[in-house]
Length: 300
Image 1 (cartoon, rainbow, N blue to C red):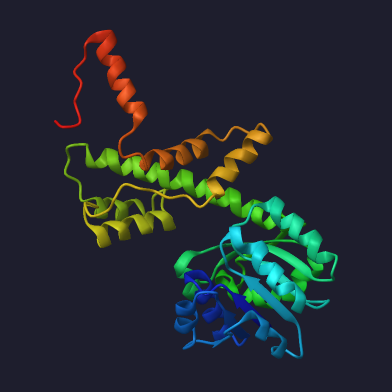
Image 2 (cartoon, rainbow, N blue to C red):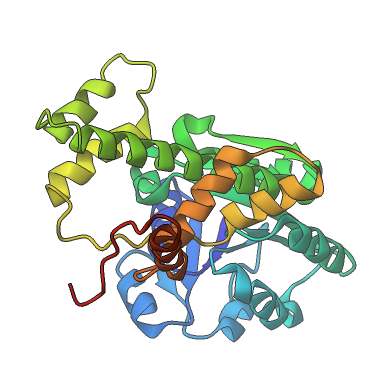
């Protein structure tokens, strides 16, 4: 199958390499020159998007976007003059599902099929395969299914989940659950660290992942974190979020679905970025005012 991968970062490049190894014709493009240069040893790379007219003169054309959600519309607009009826365009990034539904309608009007595909698997997906959550028209899904099968974990780690938006909604919830899992792991291991038992936390993580009910890939990665970073002293306690956790909580509020664990995990990420919390300074001041509890000044 003929594929143009737009976005050659860690995920886009890894996916391209996996598909190329499976016999698909993959051509890449990235707005960043250094990303294009890095990818050249693995595939043909375009210097400009306008060059796609010379590509794939025969056979099914598939355009797969692995770009930040904020630039998806910009990329699609740059492609539109060269898209033709029957093409399939896939957004494999983490986009809001409602935006995917809008893009589906806009592209449908010019005869182009749009699929929203949530992709999970991280940097290990190139070797092990990815989990692919697909939304859009079933007919378009079936047309690109050979590509999805080869890209997926074990050839079965993909599924058609429903109409436009279903793929990205499922990926949004997936990432919300991931936030909660990670937060629980962080809290549990902090308690182990402060227990007074002088645990080897790498060994505890290995043990938890050996036949216990909480074993899993995130626990395997917890063990790897301690292997790679020791006592974590070199890491700054700053945890970023890329939007999906926020969207999950927003959707839960709209639907009056209680998701307190996911919400608290999201708020904990916000908290991690506060180096000098105003709220905590106010609480310290309040404790002093009502009970003359000890306060610490910043120069102490």
